[in-house]
Image (cartoon, rainbow, N blue to C red; front, side, top):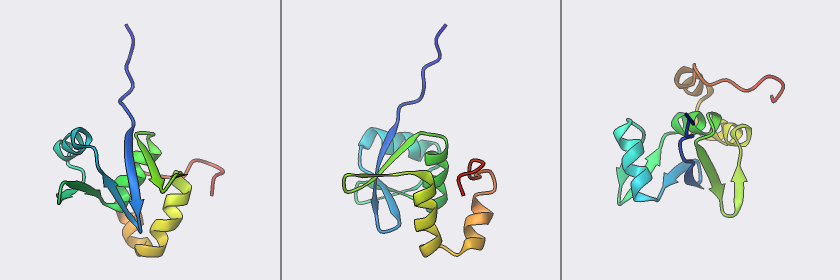
Length: 99
């Protein structure tokens, strides 16, 4: 019996907002309680994007550049008060030695 990994979700970073453009992925994520749909786009909250990056489900791009977990965490710190990030990210932690 083989275990299939869940498919990777493609996201686009605009300022500090992660946008999911693919309709099938939007519906999948919205059913699971992620983000908010506005004008045919799913906007993820910072902590949702961080979680999906951390577990390897999200490939996040700004232009052609791939944004990794630690890089996105630094971006989030610019736009979100640290206490809100900590409050929302209690289960997401940096891997040992990466910070």
